[in-house]
Structure formats: structure tokens, C-alpha cells
Amino acid sequence: MIGRFRTTTLLLALLLALSACDLASADENTVRVYSGRHYGEEAAFERFAEVTGISVEFLFGSDAELRERIKAEGQNTQADVYMTVDAGNLYLAAEQEVFQPLDSDALTDAIPPNLRDPSGLWFGLGKRVRTFVYHPDRVDPDELIDYEDLADPRWEGRLCMRDSSNVYTQSLVASLVAHHGYEDAVQIVRGWVDNDVDILGSDILVLETIAAGGCDVGIANHYYLARLLEENADFPVELKFAGAEGEGVHVNVSGAGVTRHADHPELGRRLLEWLATDGQNLFVDGNHEYPANPEVTPEPLIASEFGAEFKQDELGAAEYGSLNADAIRAMDEAGYE
Ligand SMILES: [Fe+2]
Image (spheres, protein in one colour):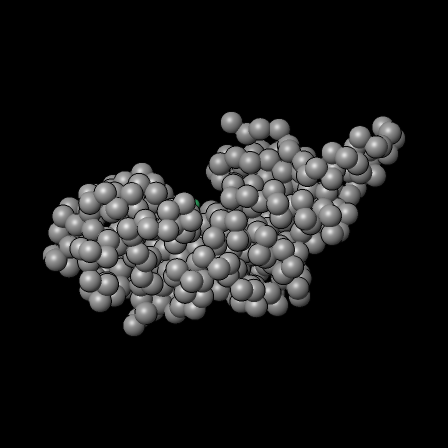
């Protein structure tokens, strides 16, 4: 269920102070966000309201639900900004004409080309690294080089991964399709299946199963391990960046764009520009994401535990986002559930 709009506290205070005839002007100074990303955006929205005087109203829901809602609302949508996780979701929203192109030097200066839509429909704001996680007592990290290596028989009965319906899995496999071609990507995924991979319903489950001895190595988004390490510094799972000797590690994004029928496209643009620059740390740090803006320093836990620098797969998020349907087909063909 999608809830009602929530609002920054500043707006609440404003509304209390305003008479009814002033509400229209308050509305003129409010940007509305539909967000499928729920990783502590509130703090960033509140700060944005404080520094700019532009209030943020937002509602959270599932990525698909909100995308459908914006489409159904058409010209009457209240959403100025659609925010979501995963390049696949961003690509799909762009395909379905949810966004309007933004012409913003601030955004194109702040966000590298591979992390945004080439025509300015959406911009990645946070980076999520999808890579190896393993139990250090049972795995020699030198054996973990690239995603395709997990198809080697030495990993039989030792793998845990996320299900094929998950968009993070889909984007990773889409990147394999981009780099290796469709047929080879099917072979790689089939190799994981032949290794009797244990397919689980969340990244946290993958990490906890490794910790509990149910498997030795898996693939997860880095910030889930950061969360567990934040709770317990001795959590017995380590992370290694895949692809250091090849294409680099698969990097996904959370991001946003201004909606096609936004009432306040200028305010939407200003929010995105702020989130990509001064607001980057507030936006990404709470979820232990890496900043999309290369000028911004990652928060200390991920910088010290995993490293601030890594070789990143430069494949464009829009490019592997566009291969989402191929990835789903490849997993189906390989028998990966
Ligand atoms: Fe996530």
C-alpha cells in the first residue's frame, strides 16, 4: 500500500503558520517526490528544505507501484520527482515516458556519464557495488576473481545467491550479457545452477547464511554487509571486489528524474542538483552507499572496511538497464530461479 504524502517538518511548521489563502504559495514552494528508495531519505529532504526553503513532500512505495501510479495519473500527477533503486527500474521508467529530460550543467558535472541516462532523463545519485561476500575461514579470496569463476566446479554446493525476480540479480546478469554476449551469459548462469546454488530471497539472508555456515560464498550489495558490520563489527563475512583483473566490479545505482508532467520541474531539478552535490553525503551515507559524485568522500565504515577506491565496471547503467529483459530470459534458460 502506498501511504499518504509525508512532509518535511519545516513544511509542517509552515503550514501551521499559514492561513488558507497562503496555501497556494506554499504549494508553489513544495517539491513532491514518489520514492521507491527507502533508505533514510528523510534527513536529506529536511536539510534541503532548511538550506533552500523548498519543502519536500514524499511518499514511499514499491518501485513498480509508484511508476504505475505516475503513468496512471498522467498530467494530473502530483509527483515532480520519481526516485528509485536499480538501473533496470530507472531504464524502465524512462522507456515508459515517466521522465522529462533535464538540461543541468550541475548534474552533468557532478554525475559521471556511465551513472546517468544519456539524454538526461535520470541521474544516478548513489552507487551500490554488487560483489563477492565470503566466509574468511572457508574461502581463500585469491580464488574469487570474477563472477564467471563461480561457475567453476570447485564451488559446488558452496554458493548462495539472490533469486532471479530480484532486480539487482537481473542487472548483474544484464552486465554479463553486455560483456560476454547472451549465449555465454547463459553458460555462466548455468554453471552457478550446476553448482547447486542456494537461491535466497534477500541479500541479508545470503550474508546470514554464509555467517551460519550454510554456504561459503555469495553475491550481495555491499551496503547490506556494511549494515551488519555496523551492528556487529565481528560479523564473520568479508567482501571482495570482483573483476579487479577484468572489467571491474558491477556497480548499480539508486537515482531519480523529474517527471514528464511535473507541476514544479524547476524545484525537482534543484532537488536533484542538491542531492548530487552538497546533499550527497546525507543522501548516501545513511545507507552506506558510495557517492555517485566522484568528488564526494564515502562514509568511514565502507571506506575502511571495503575501501574507498576500486576498479569499477564502466558499463553504463542505462546500457545494462536496457538489457533487463535479456537477463531475465538468460536466467530462465539457464534454470536459475
Ligand atoms: Fe537494497
